[in-house]
Length: 375
Image (cartoon, rainbow, N blue to C red; front, side, top):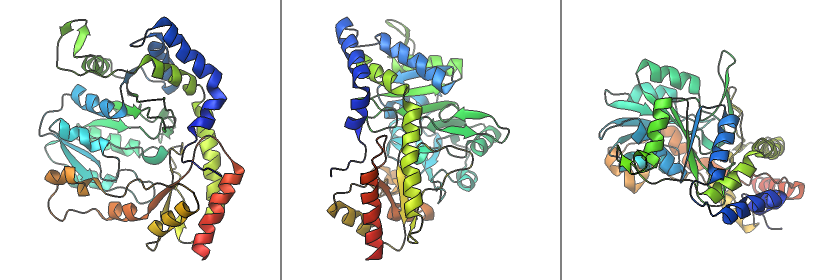
Protein backbone atom coordinates (compact mmCIF):
# COMPACT_ATOMS: atom_id res chain seq x y z
CA UNK A 1 0.00 0.00 0.00
CA UNK A 2 1.14 3.56 -0.68
CA UNK A 3 0.94 5.75 2.42
CA UNK A 4 1.26 9.53 2.40
CA UNK A 5 1.62 12.06 5.20
CA UNK A 6 -1.28 13.99 3.63
CA UNK A 7 -3.58 12.57 0.96
CA UNK A 8 -4.25 15.67 -1.12
CA UNK A 9 -5.30 13.67 -4.17
CA UNK A 10 -7.93 11.74 -2.25
CA UNK A 11 -9.23 14.97 -0.78
CA UNK A 12 -9.35 16.63 -4.21
CA UNK A 13 -11.28 13.78 -5.79
CA UNK A 14 -14.16 14.36 -3.34
CA UNK A 15 -14.45 18.06 -4.22
CA UNK A 16 -13.24 17.84 -7.82
CA UNK A 17 -16.43 19.15 -9.43
CA UNK A 18 -16.55 22.26 -7.24
CA UNK A 19 -12.83 22.98 -7.49
CA UNK A 20 -12.65 22.48 -11.23
CA UNK A 21 -15.64 24.77 -11.75
CA UNK A 22 -14.08 27.49 -9.60
CA UNK A 23 -10.77 27.31 -11.45
CA UNK A 24 -12.46 27.25 -14.86
CA UNK A 25 -14.48 30.32 -13.91
CA UNK A 26 -11.28 32.21 -13.13
CA UNK A 27 -9.84 31.21 -16.50
CA UNK A 28 -13.03 32.14 -18.33
CA UNK A 29 -13.21 35.64 -16.86
CA UNK A 30 -9.38 36.09 -16.95
CA UNK A 31 -9.45 37.94 -13.62
CA UNK A 32 -6.25 36.30 -12.40
CA UNK A 33 -5.26 39.06 -9.94
CA UNK A 34 -7.79 40.32 -7.37
CA UNK A 35 -10.63 38.59 -9.18
CA UNK A 36 -14.08 38.05 -7.64
CA UNK A 37 -13.07 34.80 -5.90
CA UNK A 38 -10.55 36.66 -3.72
CA UNK A 39 -13.22 38.95 -2.27
CA UNK A 40 -15.69 36.08 -1.94
CA UNK A 41 -13.20 33.91 -0.07
CA UNK A 42 -12.18 36.83 2.14
CA UNK A 43 -15.80 37.45 3.14
CA UNK A 44 -16.49 33.76 3.73
CA UNK A 45 -13.35 33.48 5.86
CA UNK A 46 -14.28 36.56 7.91
CA UNK A 47 -17.66 35.01 8.61
CA UNK A 48 -16.16 31.63 9.52
CA UNK A 49 -13.61 33.17 11.88
CA UNK A 50 -16.03 35.81 13.22
CA UNK A 51 -13.36 38.46 12.66
CA UNK A 52 -13.77 41.95 11.17
CA UNK A 53 -10.92 41.82 8.69
CA UNK A 54 -9.21 39.12 6.66
CA UNK A 55 -6.49 40.36 4.33
CA UNK A 56 -5.29 37.66 1.92
CA UNK A 57 -1.63 37.65 0.89
CA UNK A 58 0.88 35.56 -1.04
CA UNK A 59 2.03 33.17 1.71
CA UNK A 60 2.28 32.67 5.46
CA UNK A 61 5.79 34.08 5.74
CA UNK A 62 4.68 37.30 4.04
CA UNK A 63 1.79 37.43 6.51
CA UNK A 64 4.19 37.44 9.46
CA UNK A 65 6.43 40.05 7.89
CA UNK A 66 3.54 42.34 6.95
CA UNK A 67 2.11 42.01 10.48
CA UNK A 68 5.37 43.25 12.03
CA UNK A 69 5.61 46.09 9.51
CA UNK A 70 2.00 47.12 10.19
CA UNK A 71 2.63 47.42 13.94
CA UNK A 72 5.44 49.91 13.35
CA UNK A 73 8.14 47.80 14.94
CA UNK A 74 11.60 49.35 14.55
CA UNK A 75 15.07 47.92 14.02
CA UNK A 76 16.46 46.70 17.32
CA UNK A 77 13.06 45.99 18.85
CA UNK A 78 12.87 42.58 20.51
CA UNK A 79 10.14 40.04 19.84
CA UNK A 80 9.64 36.95 21.99
CA UNK A 81 8.94 33.72 20.14
CA UNK A 82 9.28 29.99 20.84
CA UNK A 83 12.57 28.33 19.92
CA UNK A 84 10.65 25.20 18.91
CA UNK A 85 8.92 26.25 15.71
CA UNK A 86 9.41 26.60 11.97
CA UNK A 87 12.06 29.05 10.81
CA UNK A 88 9.59 31.53 9.27
CA UNK A 89 8.38 32.67 12.69
CA UNK A 90 11.75 34.24 13.50
CA UNK A 91 13.18 34.60 9.99
CA UNK A 92 11.03 37.62 9.18
CA UNK A 93 12.23 39.34 12.36
CA UNK A 94 15.83 39.16 11.18
CA UNK A 95 14.88 40.43 7.73
CA UNK A 96 13.27 43.51 9.30
CA UNK A 97 16.17 44.18 11.66
CA UNK A 98 14.18 43.02 14.68
CA UNK A 99 15.68 40.79 17.38
CA UNK A 100 14.12 37.35 17.91
CA UNK A 101 14.22 36.40 21.59
CA UNK A 102 13.80 32.63 21.64
CA UNK A 103 12.20 31.06 24.68
CA UNK A 104 11.33 27.55 25.79
CA UNK A 105 8.05 25.73 25.31
CA UNK A 106 5.82 23.49 27.38
CA UNK A 107 6.76 19.83 27.28
CA UNK A 108 3.26 18.47 26.73
CA UNK A 109 1.49 21.12 24.63
CA UNK A 110 4.51 22.51 22.72
CA UNK A 111 3.36 26.12 23.13
CA UNK A 112 5.33 29.08 24.46
CA UNK A 113 6.37 28.76 28.11
CA UNK A 114 4.76 31.55 30.10
CA UNK A 115 7.46 31.56 32.77
CA UNK A 116 10.02 32.46 30.11
CA UNK A 117 8.06 35.54 29.06
CA UNK A 118 8.94 37.23 32.35
CA UNK A 119 12.47 35.84 32.29
CA UNK A 120 13.35 37.25 28.87
CA UNK A 121 11.37 40.50 29.05
CA UNK A 122 13.49 43.66 28.60
CA UNK A 123 12.75 47.35 27.97
CA UNK A 124 13.27 46.61 24.27
CA UNK A 125 10.58 43.91 24.13
CA UNK A 126 7.75 45.09 21.92
CA UNK A 127 5.81 41.97 20.90
CA UNK A 128 5.13 38.26 21.45
CA UNK A 129 4.57 35.72 18.69
CA UNK A 130 2.85 32.64 20.15
CA UNK A 131 2.73 29.68 17.77
CA UNK A 132 -0.31 27.41 17.80
CA UNK A 133 1.84 24.40 17.06
CA UNK A 134 0.55 21.15 15.53
CA UNK A 135 -3.09 22.27 15.63
CA UNK A 136 -4.14 23.58 19.03
CA UNK A 137 -4.05 27.00 20.62
CA UNK A 138 -1.40 28.33 22.98
CA UNK A 139 -2.51 29.64 26.39
CA UNK A 140 -3.77 32.90 24.91
CA UNK A 141 -5.63 34.18 27.96
CA UNK A 142 -2.45 34.32 30.04
CA UNK A 143 -0.37 35.53 27.11
CA UNK A 144 -2.80 38.40 26.50
CA UNK A 145 -2.77 39.32 30.19
CA UNK A 146 1.03 39.44 30.18
CA UNK A 147 1.06 41.47 26.96
CA UNK A 148 -1.45 43.98 28.29
CA UNK A 149 0.50 44.39 31.52
CA UNK A 150 3.68 45.22 29.61
CA UNK A 151 2.11 47.04 26.61
CA UNK A 152 3.18 44.41 24.08
CA UNK A 153 1.69 43.47 20.73
CA UNK A 154 0.55 39.88 20.17
CA UNK A 155 0.95 38.35 16.70
CA UNK A 156 -0.47 34.84 16.44
CA UNK A 157 1.30 32.37 14.17
CA UNK A 158 -1.76 30.32 13.29
CA UNK A 159 -0.40 28.49 10.25
CA UNK A 160 -1.06 25.08 11.84
CA UNK A 161 -4.29 25.63 13.75
CA UNK A 162 -6.90 27.13 11.42
CA UNK A 163 -10.32 26.06 12.68
CA UNK A 164 -9.25 25.56 16.30
CA UNK A 165 -11.44 27.09 19.02
CA UNK A 166 -9.93 28.77 22.09
CA UNK A 167 -12.14 29.07 25.20
CA UNK A 168 -11.48 31.77 27.81
CA UNK A 169 -12.17 31.29 31.52
CA UNK A 170 -15.39 33.32 31.23
CA UNK A 171 -16.70 30.96 28.54
CA UNK A 172 -15.94 33.23 25.58
CA UNK A 173 -14.93 31.20 22.52
CA UNK A 174 -12.78 32.59 19.71
CA UNK A 175 -11.04 31.05 16.74
CA UNK A 176 -7.27 30.93 17.06
CA UNK A 177 -5.77 33.67 14.94
CA UNK A 178 -8.46 36.17 16.01
CA UNK A 179 -7.38 36.59 19.64
CA UNK A 180 -4.27 38.80 19.43
CA UNK A 181 -3.70 42.09 17.64
CA UNK A 182 -2.99 40.25 14.38
CA UNK A 183 -3.27 36.62 13.35
CA UNK A 184 -1.26 35.12 10.49
CA UNK A 185 -1.83 31.94 8.56
CA UNK A 186 -0.54 29.95 5.61
CA UNK A 187 -2.50 28.16 2.90
CA UNK A 188 0.42 25.93 1.87
CA UNK A 189 -1.11 22.82 0.22
CA UNK A 190 -0.53 20.50 3.19
CA UNK A 191 -2.17 22.84 5.71
CA UNK A 192 -5.61 22.00 7.09
CA UNK A 193 -6.96 24.73 4.81
CA UNK A 194 -4.56 24.54 1.90
CA UNK A 195 -4.65 25.81 -1.66
CA UNK A 196 -2.95 24.34 -4.73
CA UNK A 197 0.07 26.62 -4.55
CA UNK A 198 1.17 29.33 -2.13
CA UNK A 199 -1.18 31.55 -0.17
CA UNK A 200 -1.65 33.22 3.18
CA UNK A 201 -3.75 35.71 5.13
CA UNK A 202 -3.77 38.11 8.07
CA UNK A 203 -6.68 38.55 10.48
CA UNK A 204 -7.47 41.45 12.80
CA UNK A 205 -10.38 43.17 14.52
CA UNK A 206 -8.59 46.55 14.49
CA UNK A 207 -9.71 48.86 11.65
CA UNK A 208 -6.54 50.96 11.64
CA UNK A 209 -4.25 47.93 11.65
CA UNK A 210 -6.29 46.37 8.83
CA UNK A 211 -5.91 49.51 6.70
CA UNK A 212 -2.16 49.51 7.29
CA UNK A 213 -1.89 45.82 6.38
CA UNK A 214 -3.80 46.33 3.14
CA UNK A 215 -1.54 49.22 2.18
CA UNK A 216 1.67 47.36 2.96
CA UNK A 217 0.57 44.28 1.02
CA UNK A 218 -0.25 46.50 -1.98
CA UNK A 219 2.96 48.51 -2.48
CA UNK A 220 2.08 50.92 0.33
CA UNK A 221 -0.86 52.40 -1.54
CA UNK A 222 -4.40 53.08 -0.42
CA UNK A 223 -5.26 54.74 -3.73
CA UNK A 224 -3.79 53.42 -6.98
CA UNK A 225 -0.46 55.05 -7.86
CA UNK A 226 -0.43 57.03 -4.59
CA UNK A 227 2.09 55.37 -2.27
CA UNK A 228 1.96 56.64 1.31
CA UNK A 229 4.42 54.17 2.78
CA UNK A 230 6.94 51.58 1.67
CA UNK A 231 5.22 48.25 1.21
CA UNK A 232 5.55 45.05 -0.76
CA UNK A 233 3.65 43.06 -3.35
CA UNK A 234 1.85 40.18 -1.64
CA UNK A 235 -1.39 38.96 -3.18
CA UNK A 236 -3.44 35.78 -3.10
CA UNK A 237 -3.97 34.55 -6.67
CA UNK A 238 -7.59 34.39 -7.79
CA UNK A 239 -7.29 30.72 -8.74
CA UNK A 240 -5.98 29.88 -5.26
CA UNK A 241 -8.83 31.87 -3.70
CA UNK A 242 -11.31 29.85 -5.76
CA UNK A 243 -9.83 26.62 -4.39
CA UNK A 244 -9.85 27.94 -0.83
CA UNK A 245 -13.45 29.09 -1.09
CA UNK A 246 -14.48 25.52 -1.89
CA UNK A 247 -12.30 23.93 0.79
CA UNK A 248 -13.33 26.40 3.51
CA UNK A 249 -16.86 25.03 3.35
CA UNK A 250 -15.41 21.61 4.28
CA UNK A 251 -12.91 22.77 6.92
CA UNK A 252 -14.85 21.62 9.99
CA UNK A 253 -15.48 18.28 8.27
CA UNK A 254 -11.73 17.99 7.64
CA UNK A 255 -10.97 18.78 11.28
CA UNK A 256 -13.42 16.09 12.41
CA UNK A 257 -11.75 13.55 10.12
CA UNK A 258 -8.30 14.41 11.48
CA UNK A 259 -9.61 14.05 15.02
CA UNK A 260 -11.05 10.64 14.12
CA UNK A 261 -7.61 9.49 13.02
CA UNK A 262 -5.99 11.02 16.11
CA UNK A 263 -8.48 9.32 18.42
CA UNK A 264 -7.73 5.99 16.79
CA UNK A 265 -4.00 6.50 17.17
CA UNK A 266 -4.51 7.50 20.81
CA UNK A 267 -6.57 4.43 21.59
CA UNK A 268 -4.10 1.96 20.10
CA UNK A 269 -0.77 3.60 20.95
CA UNK A 270 -1.44 4.84 24.49
CA UNK A 271 -0.36 1.53 26.02
CA UNK A 272 3.21 1.74 24.70
CA UNK A 273 5.30 2.94 27.64
CA UNK A 274 8.09 4.44 25.53
CA UNK A 275 5.90 6.89 23.65
CA UNK A 276 3.62 9.76 24.64
CA UNK A 277 0.56 10.52 22.54
CA UNK A 278 -0.41 14.18 22.01
CA UNK A 279 -1.91 15.99 24.97
CA UNK A 280 -5.20 17.76 24.37
CA UNK A 281 -5.30 21.24 25.89
CA UNK A 282 -8.19 22.01 28.23
CA UNK A 283 -8.89 25.42 26.72
CA UNK A 284 -8.38 24.70 23.02
CA UNK A 285 -9.75 22.24 20.53
CA UNK A 286 -7.22 20.38 18.41
CA UNK A 287 -7.37 20.26 14.60
CA UNK A 288 -4.35 17.92 14.28
CA UNK A 289 -2.36 19.56 11.55
CA UNK A 290 0.20 17.09 12.85
CA UNK A 291 -0.19 14.00 15.01
CA UNK A 292 3.04 14.18 16.99
CA UNK A 293 4.38 11.54 19.35
CA UNK A 294 7.23 11.87 21.81
CA UNK A 295 9.52 8.85 21.78
CA UNK A 296 11.58 8.21 24.91
CA UNK A 297 14.91 6.52 25.62
CA UNK A 298 16.60 7.73 22.46
CA UNK A 299 14.49 5.50 20.21
CA UNK A 300 12.97 8.18 17.96
CA UNK A 301 15.49 7.93 15.13
CA UNK A 302 15.38 4.15 15.23
CA UNK A 303 11.60 4.22 14.98
CA UNK A 304 11.70 6.59 12.02
CA UNK A 305 14.21 4.38 10.20
CA UNK A 306 12.14 1.28 10.91
CA UNK A 307 8.94 2.94 9.65
CA UNK A 308 10.70 4.03 6.46
CA UNK A 309 11.74 0.42 5.84
CA UNK A 310 8.06 -0.50 6.10
CA UNK A 311 7.10 2.27 3.63
CA UNK A 312 5.47 4.33 6.36
CA UNK A 313 6.29 8.05 6.08
CA UNK A 314 6.97 10.18 9.13
CA UNK A 315 8.44 13.62 9.77
CA UNK A 316 10.38 15.33 12.54
CA UNK A 317 9.03 18.80 13.21
CA UNK A 318 11.64 20.07 14.21
CA UNK A 319 15.11 18.46 14.44
CA UNK A 320 16.94 21.65 15.50
CA UNK A 321 16.01 24.52 17.81
CA UNK A 322 15.98 27.90 16.07
CA UNK A 323 18.99 29.01 18.11
CA UNK A 324 21.07 26.14 16.71
CA UNK A 325 20.37 27.17 13.13
CA UNK A 326 23.37 28.87 11.55
CA UNK A 327 21.22 31.79 10.40
CA UNK A 328 20.42 32.79 14.00
CA UNK A 329 23.82 32.58 15.65
CA UNK A 330 24.09 36.37 15.90
CA UNK A 331 21.09 36.44 18.23
CA UNK A 332 22.31 34.02 20.92
CA UNK A 333 25.41 33.73 23.07
CA UNK A 334 27.68 30.72 22.85
CA UNK A 335 26.29 27.77 24.78
CA UNK A 336 22.71 29.09 24.84
CA UNK A 337 20.32 26.21 25.37
CA UNK A 338 16.71 25.61 26.38
CA UNK A 339 16.14 22.23 28.05
CA UNK A 340 12.64 21.35 26.89
CA UNK A 341 13.27 22.49 23.34
CA UNK A 342 16.41 20.35 23.24
CA UNK A 343 14.48 17.37 24.56
CA UNK A 344 11.64 17.74 22.07
CA UNK A 345 13.97 18.04 19.10
CA UNK A 346 15.31 14.58 19.98
CA UNK A 347 11.92 13.00 20.76
CA UNK A 348 9.15 14.24 18.46
CA UNK A 349 7.94 12.36 15.40
CA UNK A 350 4.78 13.04 13.38
CA UNK A 351 2.70 10.28 11.82
CA UNK A 352 0.42 10.50 8.77
CA UNK A 353 -2.81 12.35 9.57
CA UNK A 354 -5.22 13.84 7.08
CA UNK A 355 -8.83 13.95 5.95
CA UNK A 356 -9.06 10.55 4.28
CA UNK A 357 -9.51 8.01 7.10
CA UNK A 358 -8.37 4.55 5.96
CA UNK A 359 -8.80 1.80 8.54
CA UNK A 360 -6.43 -0.63 6.82
CA UNK A 361 -3.64 1.94 6.59
CA UNK A 362 -4.04 3.04 10.20
CA UNK A 363 -4.01 -0.54 11.48
CA UNK A 364 -0.85 -1.23 9.49
CA UNK A 365 0.93 1.84 10.88
CA UNK A 366 -0.07 1.01 14.44
CA UNK A 367 0.90 -2.64 14.04
CA UNK A 368 4.39 -1.75 12.81
CA UNK A 369 4.94 0.77 15.63
CA UNK A 370 4.01 -1.94 18.14
CA UNK A 371 6.32 -4.39 16.38
CA UNK A 372 9.21 -1.97 16.71
CA UNK A 373 8.78 -1.52 20.45
CA UNK A 374 8.13 -5.21 21.06
CA UNK A 375 11.18 -6.42 19.13
